[in-house]
Image 1: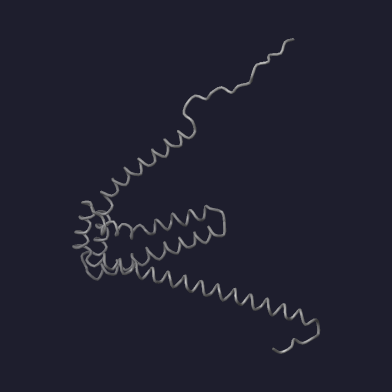
Image 2: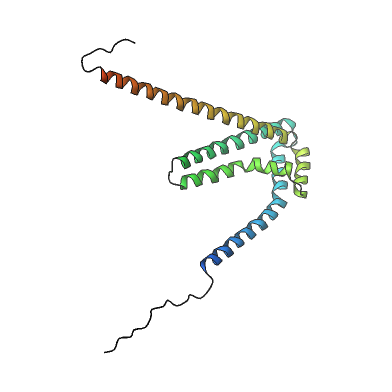
Length: 195
């Protein structure tokens, strides 16, 4: 019986290396995102302005009311969700809840972002959106800015109150720990001495 003593070599895999496949996939995703951006940039500002115009129906008061509502809620809620996701990140918790919170925050922020695209956009759809909002939703853009500023101020207030409450809880826990250590240092049956 003769044994076959041949070197064991792994056959070369046909096709591209793994890094090349990843690079091609990333490039394809980037191309799709750029194409989607240009398509949506030509459509969304005009469509958003028409929807807002339908809500306000040419009324100055309704335009201001809707602007304040969208600006306030679509700024405050995403900021609170981003803060919640950040707090989960700092605790090194499981990531799916973070991802869900971030996705919901971006979705809730879309009305504010769309209004911003109408105001700051330089393409024809943004200019058409400005004209539509001027006629059908007067006061919406300025009220949306005011609502966003109010939302940021309320968010900063919530942050301040949360910090103060947490700091007070930590101080109280420290005082209780000091009181417990002084109570155990006096021994059983002895009354603690007055300071």
